[in-house]
Amino acid sequence: MKIVFWVIAVLFAAFALVQYNDPDPLIWMLVYGVVVVLYVLAALEKSHRRMALGVFVATLGWALTYVPAFWDWIQMGTPSIVETMKAEKPYVELTREFLGLLLAAAASGWLAFRRQGQR
Image 1 (cartoon, helix red, strand yellow):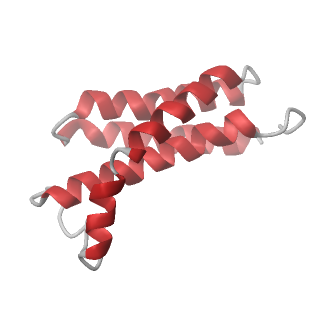
Image 2: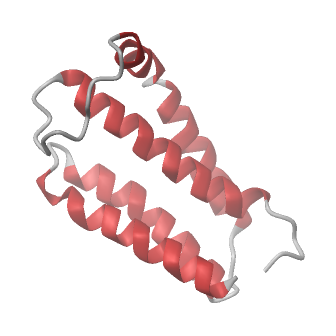
């Protein structure tokens, strides 16, 4: 499991690094960075379930605020959100943020809710 934890930590570190050109990079670097910390700790067998649970609740709750924008994007027929890296239309940025928060919630939720004996 340690290898999986390290791979996920590296992936989220990459997510954090590519936020430098985002309109609000610091908050997203922080969100992804916290997930990196959770997975590094898990890889080092120093998991913090409460912290993982807190990150899960915070990111999932925040993601829920984006559901209306995500639903609008679906109703538009799911136009591309990856054509260009510049988010020229509001639904592009909002949908990307929603999906990023879901990824962070899923990753932290996995650490928070996995069985105690799982490595």
